[in-house]
Length: 381
Image (cartoon, rainbow, N blue to C red; front, top):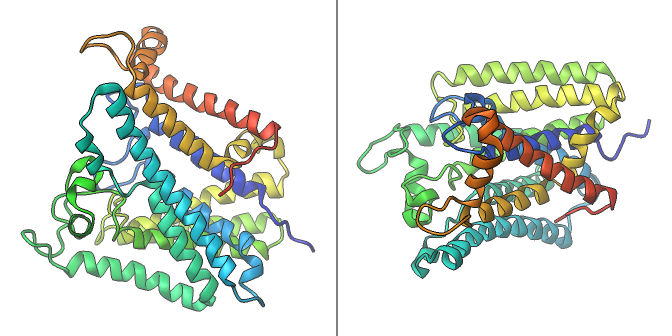
């Protein structure tokens, strides 16, 4: 049997992830958000905390299809490594460009001092995707399956032990608070506090916490590799679901000794969220690949095929709306706030209006992506 070179269910899964990310990143007001659409304050996991690991899981799940010809008989060439490095560099650069764009708007429109450019945030969502992809792709190209399992175990257990036993000056060892954890300490040493999120002492996309995020990508790779050899039958979906439930339980149990925490990307969080990724992928696989409900998944597939463009584009637009103002004077609302207050809040209320603003943003970007899809325009890196 000839297996498909691309899984539509994976594109649908990616579409769910990008639509969810746009939804939670664009409420009408950050003061009015339904709890499931907000991140856990520190320990714990809300539905919103599943979105980012879903992205990394999908990056890994796509690798067996894109790197297949380099992971069997043929050894990877220098050109392959160049393509991987180029893609990682572009992703990292896009993340930095978003941060620079925000500072530039502040400088041009609001008269922010030039010195603010010296505080640009170095890490971020795209930067983490870039580094996790780079490390994982190199590992996949050079390690056998057994070695990859060992690497994943070393990263998860090693990270746990490091967070528990390496002391942080002034806080000691095993401190998992926002102020005293090892991740923040290393970022302050290497990147400098001024280059962390908000200029604070901790960045949720830190350097050290990117290592367990690599395992999220590797988990996706194992899944995609397995799916390539499986028949499109319900037993495949069931197998995915069983492993997913097992991972959720293991992650939850590990969380009693190493709390589930997105901002620290704890080892328990990696296993826990990988379990939910498997469950959602199982549902997509059953509906799209097994039962053939292609039309049901089409709207999400449209978003999944241009996910990076949607993420970057929505980030640019949001920054423009937040940095520009309607009217003049110190009390002039931002364009973002004005749209929410004038078009959504008056008739839907503060909370529901905030949600509808986010939904309208998703719909706007779906329309943009559909126009791209209808013209066969795909943003690839």
